Length: 217
Image (cartoon, rainbow, N blue to C red; front, top):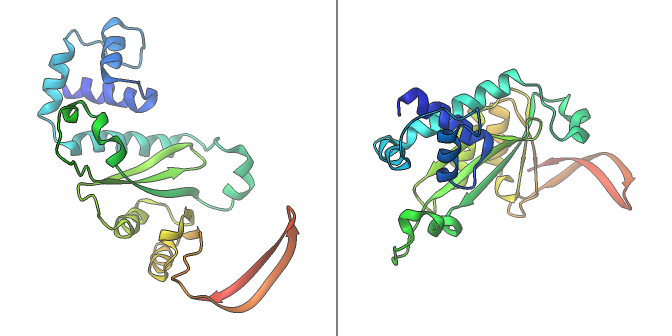
């Protein structure tokens, strides 16, 4: 298992998302899927090889492959969003999640009876490309999501539209969006007080009333 073979294998895993790595290794060995490298070795040899690699290696493979894909392939996903997408460099969704629910799906932890705090992740999904374009992990299970989300803004091109839930409805995050010359559509956080300054327009939409206001937060 050379580094080149490992990179090809993990790139194929990113593309195919197999149900299990053992299945992916079988497809590789038997040549059932041409995207996997043909490596004459046992599954045990593969896992032994990966055990000595830092997690940063796998993260780098994922990020470099994804960056090249985004740069070379035009957005075709979510076609109904195309008119909106044309007004922005990209449309992305920020989503953070703890990993407690999947901790005991890891074979390493099957027999572990102690409480495991597996950390948390932040994903940046690209609506136009239909993929995850950035993924960050924190080993701290209770790590604050906002600092990691703010850092992720640096990976986005200017004039990106960021969609987020209430967590991102803070003046600090909107200031960070402005600093990176990005836009945001965020669900309202009641902690943030808004003072209405001017109603820009109103119209009926799908049985409801849609109002557009300029506000001071």
